[in-house]
Image (cartoon, rainbow, N blue to C red; front, side, top):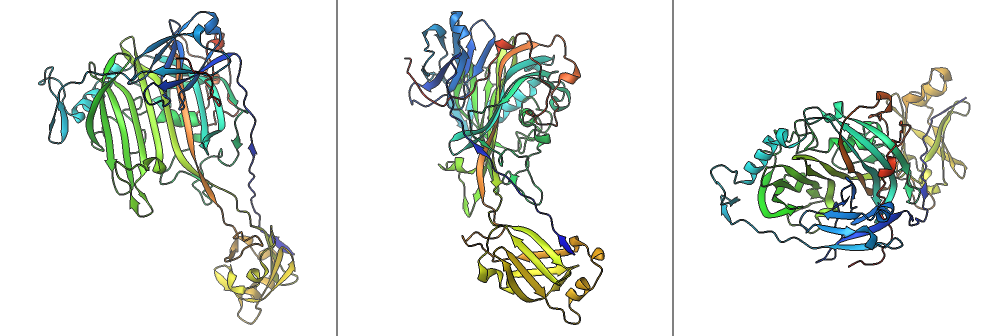
Length: 537
């Protein structure tokens, strides 16, 4: 009779399909006219139609060609740039249009330094906050006044993907509608989401290892270095919503921001930078900084100068200790140590601030299944030996050394008498059977009384013929992105039935209810571009 120990195998699947340009869209890239760098997260709206998109990380975007046939115009706005209107009819449909935005010149208030903090002089110094902390405190205090407390719905384009070796991997896309009952409610508990459509984009590569759930158990097959992230059943959209520290200002959002209303100011250092603007709205730009023995935080918060609305929050956390070298505030290699980053922006409509987009990304590590492993371990009662079966032929002189094995039963070690190769992948270990040896208790007992969980078999310094170490797993790093871009906002007239809502504790792209509204054609997926084309000056 033999007892077999079970094992687990992991599979990797990589698939790449060439992406073709879709003819029903006009594609473009927004570019800084001075430094020729792409402009991400810019708003591209169809004038007078209350729909639009946000540019991708590479500045790209796409608009349904039907808007050109309707002689529509695009309104393009981005923080720190002059706004621009573009007649869609002037754009090419067979090439990628390059559109340039000019950096905005902002008239700065006179500034003076006091106690290492920038202070601004002028308009009613006695009434207006003057330090960075005072400005932020005022903005947090006015959240109940500046953001909607009545129910709203937001239809938009959601995607999650991974960035690997300079390209998109595992790209999932959806059109969803969020039903938010207002800032007076808790977003996770009270808001709901309806999915219009979702799809796995087959034009981009897939990696089955990196799309698994986070695993902080024994094997740690997918983890975030120096951080923990609740997987929420694999629903990346729920994770993204929680990372909006403005919407969740009175509850915990993420580490160090914690509760925005209670902890944000005391947890960080701030300094006022040069003013900027967004679509004519003058803004304070305030630098965020934190540094301790483990992490460093860099970010910016943009607050309107007239009414103290928080327009945008950028927040990134870095590994402050990598090896033995500390990271400095001005380090040029800071991005190599990024742990996670969130960017959220709100847009003013009807005297209130409504979400425009949110992006959350984090670094994570994937453990690759080992090349050289043990397939089975048997206890052979008839021949009184232990048999180990490898998946590949081991280096013979390594597996024939008894010091490379540590076998125990119920905590007591078992000494090895001899080792033989039964075949190219099978090793047989004969234990010592002298009086008092643990092996006697095993092999002269009833096999039914021997529990396989009482055995412990450890092996070390064993390699296969190609030099692969036994059970050694390599790891590789990727960036996980989750992004939501609002295309249309509207007050809630009537809520759909509960059976139509997304299950928050289940992956958004797996067995969720899907219902398309009658006006579904008004929305589209702003899929990232893969090629560049003509320049439109």
